[in-house]
Length: 573
Picture: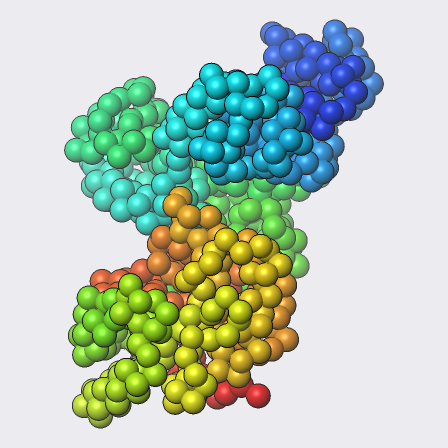
């Protein structure tokens, strides 16, 4: 990936800001800011200077230390010193730099005086009018911060993957139908199936004379045209999402797809290998000197650096390069591997379809079983079941199972984990079930140690099987409650419990990092939709995408197994 002067300047300014937040030596801070200004004002490319082995110390304000750092940035695309600095300072403080009017020193004051380390905490302090009392702030500053927080939320908000998918699929189909279009694909974070997506980047290969750029601008969902050209156009959709369309040559399609899919860290890692092999990779292809030796396909690009094709979901520089080099890439889960769904609700509590309707919908999807997991009594707003109501519900499921063909309804419950770690229903009724999904639905604000202990204590109950939506988050709406997820997953491994990947697009909980950790620790995962209707069962694909980002194979997932196999697995002790 090309390194521009602005990239180097941004890194140096970021270091200056972080050092300022840290309260470092002002002369050291000034050196980075001066270095950033020098690089940004250059008419020449520092990357070309490095490639030409020119003396960077001849530049104003660039000494031996900064020259070495520029070379590292140009050659690797990153800077180890910055990465180390970001580990020392609370990550959320960096986000505060996005608030106009909040410089590093003000952020330091917010951190040291009020303990603010995140945008959420800053908004809370503003709402409680705590900012105005700080020296150097005042009521006006507090109001400006409130406005900036609102602006940032409106302009920088990423949309959920499900929303992006709803926008992207018809647009891609529209483009593929245009005369002369040979290839079309969406790249970026959408192709990597990140849980949230910013803009959409689309690549097309077309024959000469194709009206694809003009037709793109005429798409029904386009609100305004940002830019228009023969090889690149950008539009703003009515949803507020920006879409960039790039036309590339067939000989460069694979290289461009790899480049624009990202992630940046993954691309840099691939480029490092290429450099060691005297190759250069960019969006136009793989080059040996001036000769293009690959670029038509992604497989060809990876092959040139000695790697097999790496699925887009894994391209985050989290070990996939090393795994590929050692032929250890996971055999990623697919939707066809799923044999049932283990978390669904009916009209018996807060669902919108009855038992038989849900069963038939699951059968239509080719499932062998569907787990019915109504809420327990603590969730009164959802009409949660007490022990007697649950026993009656069990009998209803048994009677329906006698009539059903090709599908079996499993008897479960989504039972609440109470504040003290006990389960919401007594063991005698829970033992009548096939399994339990145990979830937190209250007291999200417990301190980290108490919340963690609460869940781990619940796992000691022999009726505990699956931890439902483990972090409690709602994407873009509610942050996860504060728990030590690694400790929870380790406890699940030790106690023979399981974790849920809640596939509901508002949740996607567990996240990809924790899924990978569960896999490494040998904790099996249930991918469940938490469906409250027959349509809700369609969310399984989002769970599969998330599971693939977490490196999960079929063997890592509970509901790739038959019910007789699952029945044995659910026998604890």
